[in-house]
Length: 247
Image (cartoon, rainbow, N blue to C red; front, top):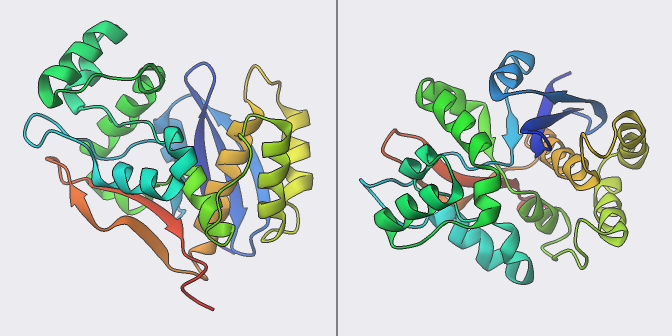
């Protein structure tokens, strides 16, 4: 049985990796220190969906990524959950102020604090994919809220994922497609301390893993439909399972 993975960032610049089989049954969750550990751990898997920007604009083609723009249009009241991807050169900034200045010089737009907080993770992924572009056939960018919107019959979540109501609401969506989603979440919540992985990190990695496993039954749709390529040949896209396409 094929195993698929969903990856999300968690505190201390680490990652949570959730596995799900082709029967949509959640298998395991592990915390990894860096992207290279994830590449090694997921060796042999055909698809890993990760919640981090892949493919960046730079001074050769500055501006916004079309995938981010389209995701914000879909998410409407939850559009703020799509952090603007940085211009690649701003990854060199040693402080938020430096990165902000570099970003603004290239695209006439600053850099949000939310994006700055995940810059090290973005840089990890960007570096490893630039040096091995073929990895992008396995590692593809997703966005948890876009996945939940799609899995919920194109209806947005009502509550913030950081609230108990939001966690329960999202588990209800996962429950409809996986027979062990809620039990798995409770197991992982007991397994790890909140300081190591937040509840919404677990939920986000779970929906990414489930979305990857659903790719065997449903078409993975991309935002935009024809992805842009960055200057290194990386696709700038956000993928999600389109359950409405096959009815």
